[in-house]
Amino acid sequence: MFTCFRDSFTSVYTRAMPKYYTPKEANEALTVVRPMVKEMMEISERIRARQPEFWSVVQKSAGNGGNPPW
Image 1: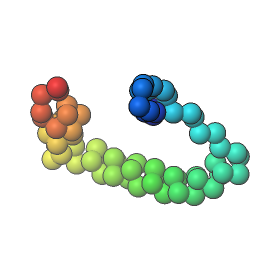
Image 2: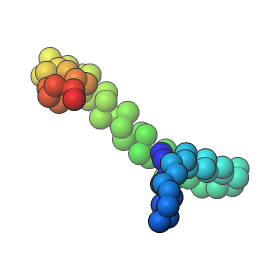
Image 3: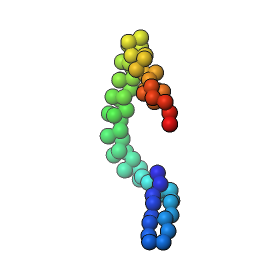
Image 4: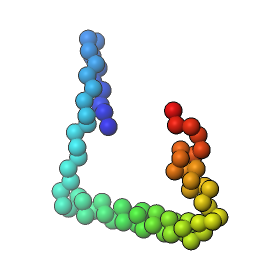
């Protein structure tokens, strides 16, 4: 991610500072992240179980939705 600082004379692009988390903050974030990852894994498993049915959709999404990359 880039942040742009502009004034009347110049424009300077810099990388955003990384966010560091305390162990407590990280553990609290896991209460949100874990259910999301679990749901994504369940969806992925259902897609794999029905692979013949969804394979063309997976291929298109992996290839930018079937649109040429620009």
